[in-house]
Length: 406
Image (cartoon, rainbow, N blue to C red; front, side, top):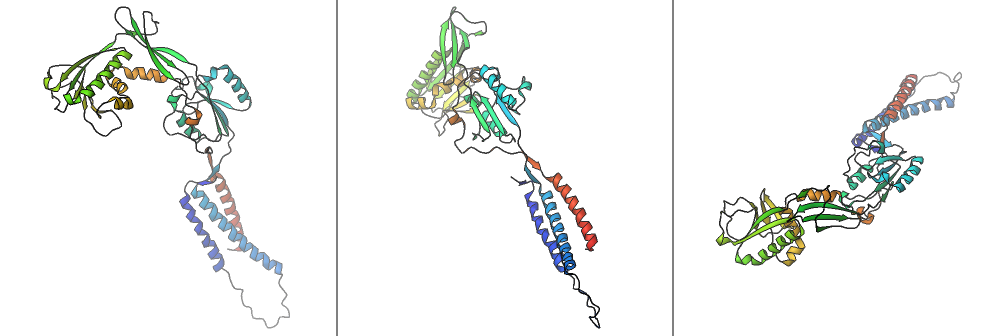
């Protein structure tokens, strides 16, 4: 498909009226010769007269073509360059699988180039230090700008690697998903009383990821044993918020039972609060003003319209946006959201779990259901050809104009 870098300059084609106008206005009437007799006048060859008119039209055509070529030149004419490359893109680690190695040998013989499914698509032989963190949709967008006749992709379709804008697969791309093996690994170990150790075990497969906690007295040397974190929580409430208090106590109890952490809970009414009472966290369920001397991390209730159950207001203050009951607690995952705030080091554990997540996203969900799009084509500038043609025709026009004295 032909494209123009500066299509606004196509208005220069209106300059074609100039040589046409000059040609029409410069027609000359023949000289009037007064003859006494026609006896010695011979008839002029009509073929020679036609030749004169043909030369004038040829000159006009040359000048019009020169204007057209100049317009195309300044408009930045370009056309698609032929696509001859064929790629095989592999997610890092898949190249070691025996079945894929067999397919790769066959594809290499068919002219395919082996590259890594990563930013800038480095050659597989040069991809030792390439980053393993990828975004499938982003890479698909990059492929649409490449002028490649055929692309075969082997990917794990990891659910955590689909981020951003969802694309339709171009017609030149064949995407082959490869499932990962089921993986179980220890995520965290915490020393309990005596020789007892609580181990947080992660289990992940193509369909599901879940976690279990078990007690043991043996542990691999690969896991560092830590002591359970102790978190003190001060729960301040008025009588009208007694049910909210019950929901939060249940959430804190669930966190303590499912995660190796000690939660020390203190409860008090807002009227009986001792300002000298210290805690790592304070949950304020009261209409009364929060004491100015309060310096710990604070969660305070202030109902308002929001999709989030907790909103960060300051570096150490969070807003509880809803009154709590069983329905709200289940719908907003209060226990998980509260655990994310209270437990230190959870971000590190989350990053480890995300990195090892083996869940796959089905192709029917991974790619847009819209009609498959054509891949983008690389464009080649026509300027070198236009310049050569322009100079050649300009030389011809000058020669013809000189001979015709135009």
